[in-house]
Length: 410
Image (cartoon, rainbow, N blue to C red; front, side, top):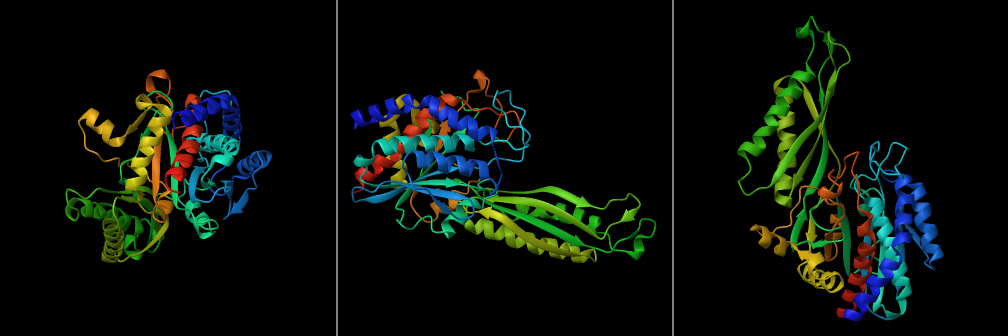
């Protein structure tokens, strides 16, 4: 396979300027959630120019198929396309000016998958099966992947395995270095919630005439800390955060309502269920103790991202064939080098998790910016930048991993 790996890498390097151009257009035309019309139009046009027949999937997703000329299985490659509602402050010539920003690198993912689409089209006769290209909206709000699955993403043809790549700024590795997640959970489940405390408004000088929702909300906020302090074991990894609290408009009035918003992150479904249950019970009971009422609603979220054991091992071999030992590592290797364990758990959630709950899946991290080379800001920061030297290698990883897996799993 050395010859094929070398060919894919050489062709990817030849596409470098094309991939960069795609990335920069996408970067200057960001959208959020499902509202990504410019991005969808651009991706669809480029796929059609390559000879693909992209199909709409869900509210704002696109799917295209490569290969299919030989019988075999179906391997899915995913790129997310949405940005964040952040005003860009990064010092780049192609900065966005519409109040949104690709601060998580999804423009990099989309450009890399377009690059992979070019590589796969050039090798279409060699593909042992089918590669399904998934261009996904609304990852940042944890809704896009689920929406596409509900719309039939994993069927027609039925997907057998899936892969995602996420670029990482601020990693101390040369741009284009790949880290393969260890088997098991690598990203926590996420749940967003709102607690609305209903009281009874009145004049601030006559508190006895009303029911103070702010007082109840403050006690709820403190009481929720009891869960982590006294109801979770040392081995349970979970975080509950109250990030917003809003109430009232006047300093001399007790408002009718107070609203809190927050999130929960957990690494297993049992702990996830416990925290949601106790959140409801504590909020309702504490509010009642202060004569108020609490209503809890859960918004968007996603389950844990689970990496398949066989696919993790396969991906580790494939990226080392392609990139060499010096630019491809398993999590176990990195942890052994640093004296740590073998876990690849991160604190950030990822809605590719929905795919991983349905088919064997793997998540790869792609280094895209060393701190000592001017890429010191983290993801989601208004000044974050990503090293475009990672792009062509990322496209090669997408294409080569899919082709190799299909070849070995005929």
